[in-house]
Image (cartoon, rainbow, N blue to C red; front, side, top):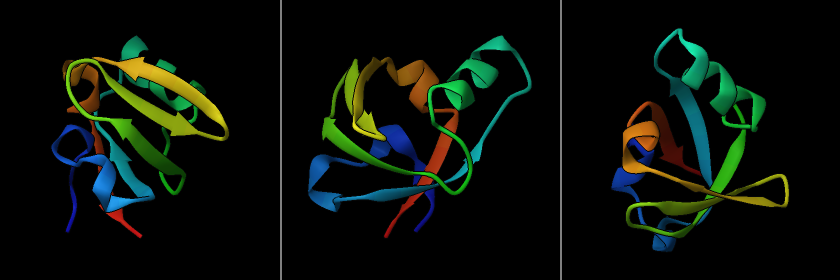
Length: 74
């Protein structure tokens, strides 16, 4: 099941990023933070903003940005 990251909740466990939509500064910044294809992330807290962990770092990210990130459960 591939879906936007904001549609998952912490009970799904680790998620693999499948795609990051867009070709603008915000999409590039997401990739710089570790939200890029093939990377593993965990949703710590759902909501707006959600708390997402990648590579041991946690980020509070709004639903508008999370809608650009598509993932699937591992």
